Image (cartoon, rainbow, N blue to C red; front, side, top):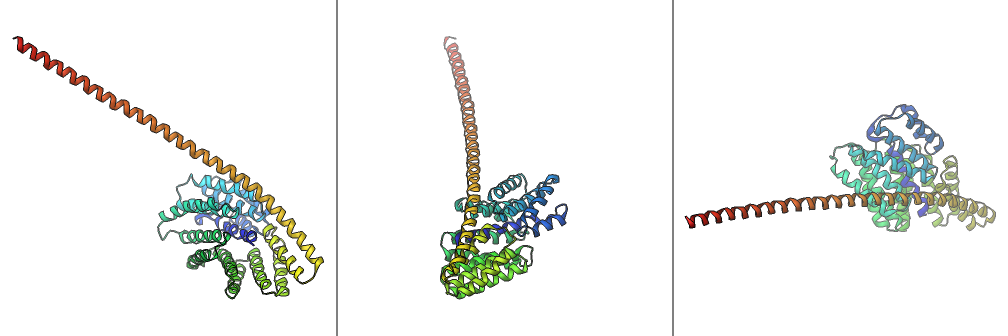
Length: 376
């Protein structure tokens, strides 16, 4: 279940493709790319790459990199997604726009959380929170980014089987999203958070609270026409039905989810659906269907794990590079301090030596003067 839920953190990245409300050339193409992110990510990638070739503005380039990252996530191509996030982060560091920098940092935190690099995710979130604190309360996007930050923290706690603390974070996230419900992409994010709240209640064996949150997740997914989000919420309801031993009802929901996910190419979503379908068929005494869907489940799982392994290796390499850069900066700083210290030492020593010589000369002069006075 933990593996299946990871995809929801990543769908947050769709919110990043429009930074600070800025317009990108060929808005119609960008709009088409956004609409195709999950149903046809290859098309979104093709559009993004073409736009990137002719884009010169740094902020607009960041927006396109984030689009490409999200599209690759939809394909479960974590390695490519990570590379685009890192490029966006590199460009963001060259800007003086705190909102853009915060936006990209939270995107990177989502990526690391999905890869289960929780310490790295929290480290980046803490960086983002510092920037959020520097933004005025009325700054556009501050509430949105605050809501996403709490949502990511909630997902980390949930992944660590701490559902009670996760719920606290998710409810704060929902409270912030409610303040900006009419804004773009908020519905999709609320669908994701409600889905996670539903699983927290399931983990706490509070099924009576889980069902309405899954239904809320479906409502917001339909509001944003997000088929993959609706499919995930249906799968959550199906798992709840399975726990109640209502396997036929669970299968009905899973078949709906399977139909919605056909064109998404989402390995994690399909993996979860096939796993649940195989388990329900097994309980219902249908071994042939169990074997069919169990085989599909392991195929999806293998592909996902291969993709994740590649991306984690690149993440480790990137972390090592960042560490080397930091060590280099520390060494440079140390050398600067040493040079400054030696320079200061020579200046002070020179000053003291000058004073000593001056005092000695003055003493000799006075001594000579006294001697002359004595003999005169």
